[in-house]
Length: 78
Image 1 (cartoon, rainbow, N blue to C red):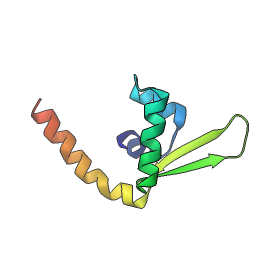
Image 2: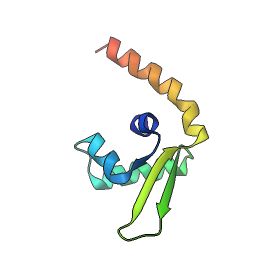
Image 3: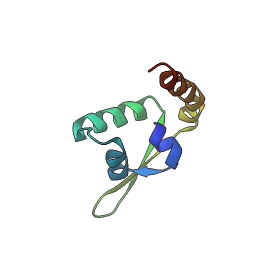
Image 4: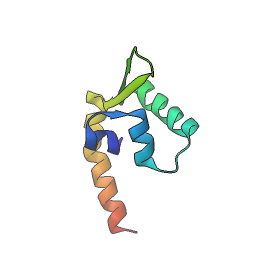
């Protein structure tokens, strides 16, 4: 969610590269879960090759201040 928040809109491949060593299965599963929880919005374009973009939903945006504070706490306590 952090990467999508920072970039506002990310395509699947950009997100996978940003996350590094994540597998396709794990990323796909997490994105589906976030979408099911209405935290991200998935937009699919009808073209070849397929183009899919992700952005935070209004509900997902409300979670970002909490995640920011959690990240700061983690940095201070590592």
